Amino acid sequence: MVLFGLIMIALILFLYFTNMYSRWQRKKSAVPTDYRSLLQTNVRYYQQLSPEEKIRFESMVQRFLKRTHIEGVGATVEPLDRVLVAASAIIPIFGFKNWEYFNLTNVILYPDTFDETYQYEGGRRNILGMVGSGALNGQMLLSRSALREGFSNTTDKQNTAIHEFVHLLDKTDGTIDGLPSKLLEHSYSIPWMKLVHQTIQQISEGHTDINPYGAINEAEFFAVISEYFFERPDQLAEKHPELYEMLTRIFRQDPGKMGGK
Image (cartoon, rainbow, N blue to C red; front, side):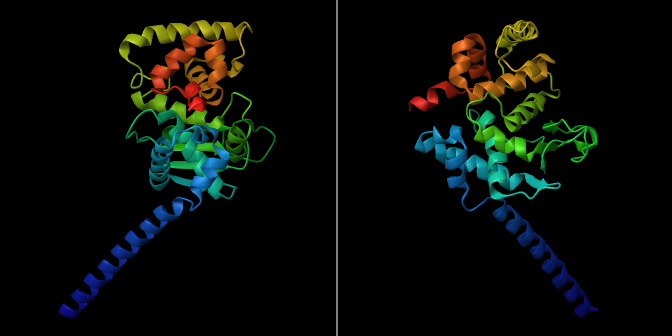
């Protein structure tokens, strides 16, 4: 009996340490060895950071990749995909030290667009990304082609992955409603929503260069204008200075000044 007990203890310890080693290996492999060069080559936001800020950005990327599982459905997740997902997550929160996406565990990459039933084949596919709810709570679904397009096209005002991570930030107060109360000081909440509604009206009337998708509701407006803010901050500051100023308060950063460093 004593021998049997020792064997069982040894087996339990073996399984425990095997599991711990396996988890360590997964975390280690989650961060591509060449992630710095991938950031430098593919992420304009990162390129414009100071050397000290690049180190902090890299640290946040590593932490995100070690905490978040990224998998493909019908698509092979390549090192570039991991780095771009992480960059998309870090860009909106770079103004906040020690921020964690506690409401995210998995990011699922589809090859391209998918439909409401999460199918990536067929003729009714028009979704590029979404934050899961209900049974999919804690999940994010992204089109890999849209993920890459968001970083390869530096002349437009769109980035699907940043759009979805902004929805996650919006959700930290419990609802995706376009009012990120945990990011915005209370005294600015009413002016922000007033500005949102005024701009949505302008979009509906065709009097602005903001993506019309932002006129759907306040939540989509916040995500759309945030894409604009991070993709073309110089243009947003010139054409929509009030919006730009409010977004610098919300995100606690001023991307329009980064290129001048």
